[in-house]
Image (cartoon, rainbow, N blue to C red; front, top):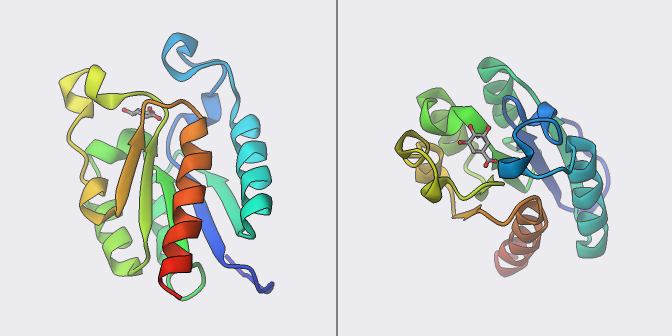
Length: 153
Ligand code: DHK
């Protein structure tokens, strides 16, 4: 995760199965694809004066490594941990170790869904959580992140 321009860099990290957006249970996750999410994030970041590094992985170790790489390089992390939200203490530990502001995003409203989706380890490391607003949650998260970074200057 290298960064050379002067805009603050926000990592936008996506966990397992989000590469299937658009195909996957569209009544829950909508019809937009991960490419659409990336485009929305890129446009929003441009308007906010942020640089983004947008990534998706199906691997727990890979997302942990990406979070570790954020330390000292990125200014903040927007993360949809997907299925690792409720299972990964390793991801929680990496986010805590990053010492960066973290905003957790879920496309669906996890609180209206199965109970097992509702306990998030990641929330223990998050400044805030956005869920249930579809992919616009990513744009809202970047907007909130820009405010947080501005406040901390
Ligand atoms: C995405 C997933 O893949 C699920 O495992 C989560 C989240 C919900 C979302 O709404 O973006 O439970």
